[in-house]
Length: 340
Ligand code: PLP
Ligand code: COI
Image 1: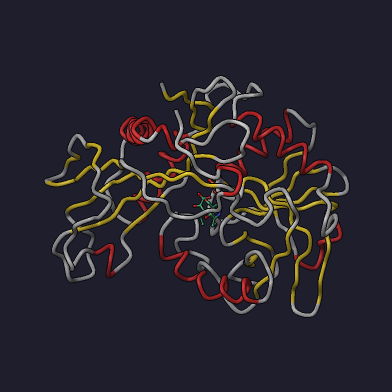
Image 2: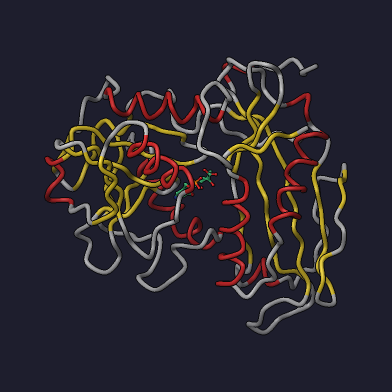
C-alpha cells in the first residue's frame, strides 16, 4: 500500500520519511548499522565535515515496476564511487555489501513512499558519509557517520523530458584541474551555488562549466553530465579528470552503442564547435535525461535540436534507460538489484 501523495506533481524536494539508516565508524571499524526514526544528526561542533568539508554523498533511486515490486539501478556503482571519493578525502570506505544493504533496508522500511508505477516518480536515496568527532586542526576525523535517507521525487529540471536552456559559465569553475571534481563531495557543490544562482535568476536551468584550465571545452552541468549527439551519429561525452563520473552517462554510453548503434566517444567538446551536434542533453540520477534546448555563452545563443521539441535520439535513449530502470525493458546483466 502506498501513501496518498500527489505523485505526478512531485518536485525534487526534501520530504521527511519515517526511517533512515545510520552506522558509526569508531576505533577503526564500522558498527552494524541500524534503522532509526531520528532524522537529526547529533555530532560534535568540531566535526571535520562541518569545518573542512570532509564529507561525501551519493544519489540513486528506487523504482516501482509494473508488477508492484521495487528495484535499484546499479547501486554497486554508487558504492564504488563513494569508495573512490572516500579515498580522496581520507575517509574509511563503506563496503559495497554494507552500502547496498543499507539502501535496501531504507527502501523496505519506507516502502509506502515508493511512488506507484506509471507516475514517473521515484524514491531518491541520499547516502551520506561525514567525518565527525573532536578535531580542530586540518586533519581527517577518527570517527565517521554513514547514513542513508530517502524521499519520493519527481523531475529535477522543469518539465522532465522538455528541453530547457543552460548558461555556459566563463567566470566561475566548480572544480580545479587537479582538485576534487571527480569526487562527489559537498565542496564542489558549495562552489557551484553562486554560479547556479546566477543561472536560475536569469532564466536558465543550470550552469554548464568549462574545463578549468583553458575554458575552451564543455565539462559538465552543475548537477549532471553533458552529452551530445553528433551529426555523424556519435554519442559524445566530455572526457576530463575534473568531472563527476556519472553512472547514468556510462550507462548511456553502453546503451547508445549496443542498443542504438551509435558510436560512443569520450573526448573533447570544444565550445566553438557546437555545430557538430544535432542534439544535446544533461544526464544524471536526478536529471535522468534532460534535453538541452539552447546554451547561452556570452552574447552567443546556440540551439541544438529545438528549444521546444525533444530530439528523436534523445527520446530513444530516455525510453530505453527509463524502460530498464522501471523494469519494462531487460537491461544488461547486473544493472538491476531487486529489493525483496
Ligand atoms: N555531475 C554532477 C555534478 C552530479 O551532481 C551528478 C549527480 O549525481 C552527475 C553528474 C550525474 O551522476 P549520476 O549519473 O551518477 O547520478
Ligand atoms: C544526483 O543526481 O543524484 C545528484 O546528486 C545531483 C544533485 C545535485 C541533486
